[in-house]
Length: 318
Length: 135
Image (cartoon, rainbow over all chains, first blue to last red; front, top):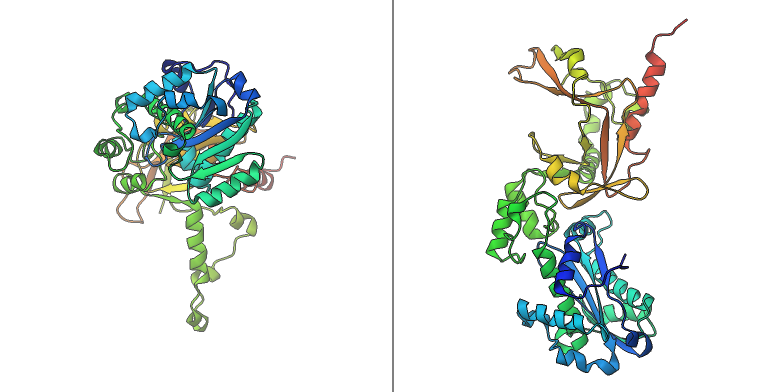
């Protein structure tokens, strides 16, 4: 994570500016200046995510932290479950939170759709849960690095909370760690983190620049949830038969791959092909040993291994 | 069957020198033009170690540019009409040429162990074996 920023984000406009100047195919992160109070007095730190489910756009991990003594601020800011709030309300809460920069610190990691599908479609299959956990751990580490005096950490869970909590406890034995379902509606500090994440994701989509130069595609992609008819239409309208979708889309989602099967050329990957070839080779019939004639390949003059290993053959026909 | 490759010197020296050719580690079941500069090239980045990075249909790709040895050229042939029977003569026209290729692997840095890279060894060996001996 490269979360060292020269300029501080103090308004929603700054946030938009920050998001639009970043390369949106690579993950990037922002971490606010740590309030002096948070370096001196014990703090609570919350973590939540936004945009895990949608077929397009980045997934954003957010964190918020403040001194245990200043937690009343969170109640004053009306930090609540970000999903239960309207978009306008969330933006309003975040801009108020940004004004409290002497009391409350925050940070986000914007995980690009390209990074998400590249991870899920890598050879070693780096799962979305793993990506999520690593992002949460990265945010906690960043807070520690920047001098936040962490006392307790609250995290909204991915997968079974017990296992995730044990994992975080093993990494950070000095903090009181609570991993829970729906932590964003239970703990105000997680709500604050959730709002940071959710607003960042919404704004990232609003200022999204298509590297594919598809100006007409902007603002026509909807919420990104597979059930949204606008998103469905977008996947249909902006599908290139060779390349598929612009890289706003997470190719590894079944919604995307199903749409590709319908409207793009079929693509076969090398590794899968090789496996098939091998299994064909090993399928020698028992009866073939009793055949009077040798199979075709045996009668050919064998090429030297140098050529065979390199897939080289002389071409007389095309 | 006889194969004619037509085009000659003019086409080999033609202005398409900078053609960018990408070799992807997959088979695309298509035979048509592809908007490579629109969908693929904007995302090609260079890592610290010089290895190139890109993404195709969500799959992570790592690649490197392979320059052909001097005096070698890649050519792209086009056949206007494919004859109906196998015995007829076939005519191909040189429509483009290139001096390098960007070779991509799926989530694995290209190395000397890749078949494509190894296949180019033959060029040096062939030269040593088959070039006329000067006395």
